[in-house]
Length: 533
Image 1 (cartoon, rainbow, N blue to C red):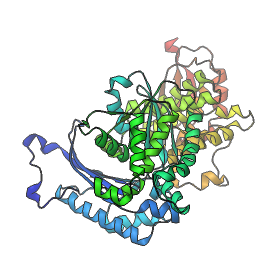
Image 2 (cartoon, one colour):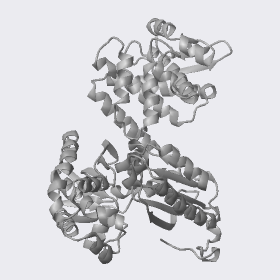
Image 3 (cartoon, helix red, strand yellow):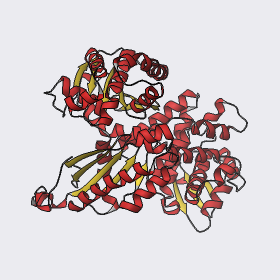
């Protein structure tokens, strides 16, 4: 851990750096709390100043007791207090300058809310508990620039994976496109706890106990990615960075380190053959790292074997890099990232044989209406992409049956994995689709009524827009390509160009108009723009 003795020890800033913004990102993991302090320029450049790491026992508590002990919480408080003091020296004081997240160890603890509340009371640091989709999104954000620079991976299907203490993240990427993402309950600390419950430790002899558990998760990964061939493997995580540094001391961390699959397997066996005390002494590891290092490397080796790769590329990028990149955009979603979300939604639609032309057209109409009504709905721009995804998937329930298909669509979305879409946003999308037809939301609808008011209002506003968009393509012909709108005190006018007969759409709109009028206070009137014909 880097130590700052006084403010005079801080890096000198030249005149040009005066406009750079100091920020801090904190990653609360299974066994470590890590922090990066950096500066961000107005152009989005990142200059890292400090990288810090402190060991904690969150995973040991959460994965065995399902709860974080009071002693562990207070240890985390002390770590974060020391981080806060260092932030103060860098003039990082506002909440907008700090991004703190927690992953599976906190997410799975029954007392997670008590944990984040205690941290906030003691330090003023607001911790966001990331769900699996958000972890995958931030991981991709951090590593994608590095992948794009590697010539050997330009035409490959990349299996990007990180085996952490509690879970394994796996993404399949081709170029800039994410084709698959998921998180599996395969983690080195979970496996370690399994060994301890069986009265064993992480040694060479224990690999026969570990392999069946590892292979069970890997078989599921193979099943879900069987459509992809020519896979290259890119590994993230501290365990593989350690292996790369030991096997190739000359490794330039600005590039990917290529390790042969055999090197990884042999090194895993070497580490498993050593006692934890010897690992601590020889490699200057923390005890927490020594306990799980061999297990993690064995899991990586088994994964490489299963995917039949000869080379495992190791990246120095990590979640903190993704968090820093997120800070440069002030949390806004980039166009490139939105494209990945849309691609994932379209892939989901294909699984249920959706009408792609109709779905995309309704999505585009929804986007146009969202922008025309920005003064009325007053929602942040990122809700546009949630509406777009809802429009793409609004009819996937037809795969189950015609009757009540909007409810079937809701169910399928709730149980889907959409890249980059958090659990909270997935609920919003599912509920928007639920109310794109038939009854408006009612207090007797339990799932809707259980949401907070902000979520209910967002769903109602966007579902009302989706109803209008669906009506505008009632003919399933995509004939309405453009329109102009006019909002008055008595109506919302949609004027359509270059379409002779709008009777079908007008009937559909009349049937679906009520919810829009309830939310926005005026009915929708569809007219033919005679000036365009």
